[in-house]
Image 1 (tube, helix red, strand yellow):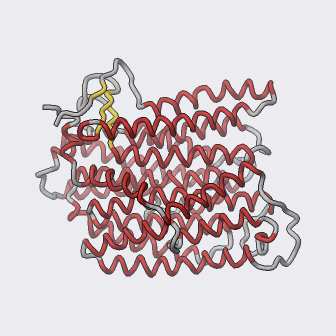
Image 2 (tube, one colour):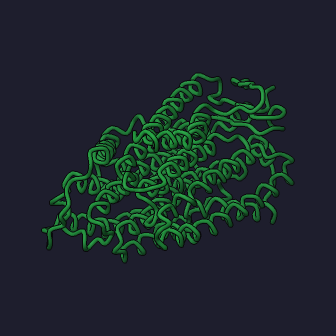
Image 3 (cartoon, helix red, strand yellow):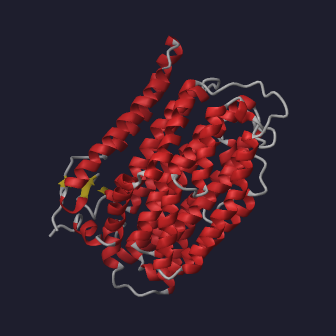
Length: 506
C-alpha cells in the first residue's frame, strides 16, 4: 500500500520535535535576557514552546488521519529508509506525543510559581524542554537507532532534573542511583540493537516486522526478549527493575516528578510495547508479561502501604499503575493495547495532578510527612480537593477516568484467558484504596496544629483544578480518548502491513 512519504533534504525532524529542540537550544540565550531585564522571559518562553509543540502534534494528527494507511514517513538523513534513520509517525506515536505535550504545557505553567524561589532557572527550563523533545522523539522514531538517540536525550535530561536540588544530599543520591540503573538499561538496549542488526541486517522497525514474521523461537530470540525487557523495563519501572523510582520521584522537584510519573515511565513502556509487537507473536510474551504485571502491581501496592512520605507513596503508586498497564500488554490484543494506551493518558492526568497538588501542599507546609500534613485540607481546600480527586481516580473509583481504563484493561485479560490476572488486578485496586484513603483522611481531618499556610498561588491552583476537572470529564465522557486510543491500538496490533508498506513502498 502506498502511503504519504515526506522527502526532505538533509536532516529532517517532525515539527513537534523540531519545535522543542529549537526551544531548548534557545532557552539559555533567553535566560541571559531574563537576568538583565528581570522579566519572566524563561517561563514565558517555555510555556510558548510547549504550547506550540502541542499545536503541532494536533496538526500532525490531522495529517496522519488523512494519510493513506494513516502513516507518515520522514526520512532523516542519508539514503531512503530502511537504509537510513527515519521517523515513522502513526496514530500510536501521535497519541503518545499528544499525552506528553499536553502534560508538558500544564507542568510548564505550574512551574512558573513553584520554581520561582529557585536559582539556575535557565538550566531547569532548558533541561525541561530537552526532556520533552526526547520523549516526543522516541514516540515518533521509525528505527531503533533514532529511538536510542532520543532515549539518551530523555535520560540525560532527566538525570540532571532529578538531582536539580543539588544543595541537598538526597537528590544527588537519588539522581546517581537513577543514572546507574538507567545507564545499565541503555546498555541492554544497545545489546538488543546489536542482536537485531545481526539477525535482520537493519535497525528499521518495519524491517523487524518483515524479518521476524516467520522466524522460529530460538535461544537467541529468547535472549533478545530478555535484553529488551531489561532495557525498556528499567525506565518503565517494571519489577524488579523499579528500585530507582521510589528514591528519584520524591527528591525531584514536583514538576519533574509529575513528568517522570506522568509520561517518562510510560514512554519506556511504549518502547517495549512497540518493539514486542513488531518482533514477537503475542503468544510468546503473553505469560512472562502477565507474571511481571502481577508482581509489579502487588509489590508496589504493598510497599506503598508502609509509606509516610507523601511523594514516596505516590511513587510506589506509579509502579503499581505500570503493573495495571502491563495487563493490557499481556492480553496481546488490540483491545488490551487500547486499554493500556487509555490508561497511559488517564494516568498522565491523574498522577500529574497528584504530584503537582502534593507539591503545592509540601511547598507551603514544608513537609512531606503524611501525618504532619493532617488537616491541611482546611487551610488549602481547593488544592487538597484536587489531590483527593486524583487519588480516587488512581484507585479506580467511578465516575473518574481511572475506572474506565482499568475496566478495559481487566476485561481484556478475561478475553485473553487470563482471568487470574483480572482477579489480581481487582484485588490490587482494592488494596491500593487502603493507602489512598489514608491520604484523604489526613487531608480532611481536623488539624492538630495551625499549619500557617494558605491556598496555592493562582498558576499552580488553576493547573491542578483544570486537570482535576479533566479527570472527571474523561470519566463521564471517555469516548474521544477511547476513539484515538483504539485507532492507535489497531494500527499497532492488526494493521502492521500498513506500517511496513510505508517503508517498503511497492
